[in-house]
Length: 179
Length: 296
Ligand SMILES: Cc1cc2nc3c(=O)[nH]c(=O)nc-3n(C[C@H](O)[C@H](O)[C@H](O)COP(=O)(O)OP(=O)(O)OC[C@H]3O[C@@H](n4cnc5c(N)ncnc54)[C@H](O)[C@@H]3O)c2cc1C
Ligand code: FES
Ligand code: FES
Image 1 (cartoon, each protein chain N blue to C red):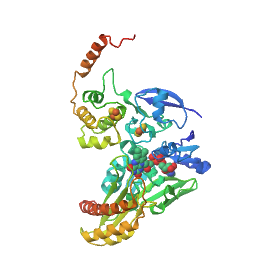
Image 2: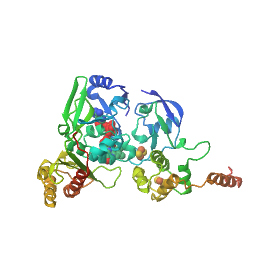
Image 3: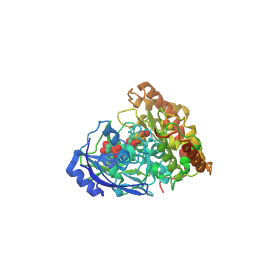
């Protein structure tokens, strides 16, 4: 039998009706409609579904949505503020911390939880903490570089402006016109 | 597979529910074993009782001169980060820090690790070293049993249909204690132990003569176990390489590992010897470095 639950995601409340066995992962993607959180293994091993619940990094595929009533849930969609990327998001772009991107939301959420707890980690600490986030594309070094860059503020201040300008220029070429 | 979810807010409420539903209501703590078993259809549940909302079960309490109590909802992450556990029971902190990775440590509980009764449960060997006791509660009352009597086989414990594990008590140990937990897996994270070994050394007065040595093994028998004959070889002795060698041999003889997808029986027996040879000196060094007397 479906039950009502109010989930607080990225500061906003979502009222949804779900079966008691609904996993937080599926509630976020299918009921709330935030598909940034990815499903990889579904058994807690890959880290793709990592989200932050009441300040703690957890696998949303190992969490019942009903158990999250009243808790603060943060997903990848909650990081960018006022049209500005979170430093970690920018660092992943600037340092090429992803290829296909499937693991990336989980990687960034894991890195955020780390930097929230330890703003100045060593490379070893980053590797240890992120050992539960698998990536089948990058070989990990780019991810490590991106996290270290975000931690040490080695991201360019004008990245976003340049990026927006570049996007505008591409769009002005009209090559993606519907025909 | 749908189920009905019970969400008691207090221990008393949970025990009443367990009384009326009995075996039918499956207990859920962190869910890191439970939800995976359910998904793989190795477990069937029509009624699930989540303990997550019971605040009174989520604590780590230290009482000087008595010991440390872990509430059933204390997670691996909380235990690994606890200052008192790290100082007095580093083997347990090391074991909890090696469960899965952060995402699993923040959900999984030490209580669930024990109740799940996997031979590979990482928290079990340290708690066996500490002669921990478990407080099992039901609407009928509470009983305290030794961890040595808790496991009955893979995935089987003495928990009755109407009982839940309420807390884990770790008694303070007289003298200086040093200990370590070594885990061998194919990779460091998200990996079940091929062999897990806990060793504790107790020193009382002398830095040379070991007043007690305890060895616990995981993943090498139907339940985690103490290697009591191996321990005997080092007790009240000055530790020498020949004795470590002998204790490692004897400890391996006490195990009865199987061959499975992770490793063969022979490899596991070999690794018990190797890990004993590493863990015993490490535990001794930790005891010598420990300036905190267990008993005040
Ligand atoms: C990706 C991944 C990696 C893992 N790595 C490791 C590892 O390295 N080492 C390791 O030891 N384990 C590992 N595990 C297994 C699991 O995380 C641990 O065993 C964990 O401690 C289980 O605790 P839980 O709170 O999640 O238990 P749950 O899954 O909620 O419950 C487990 C079992 O115990 C019962 N139970 C739980 N609490 C109680 C209680 N208070 N009273 C009565 N019954 C209870 C439940 O009914 C169920 O049968 C891993 C799991 C995953 C998914
Ligand atoms: S999908 Fe949750 S950890 Fe892989
Ligand atoms: S970028 Fe493809 S899996 Fe990590």
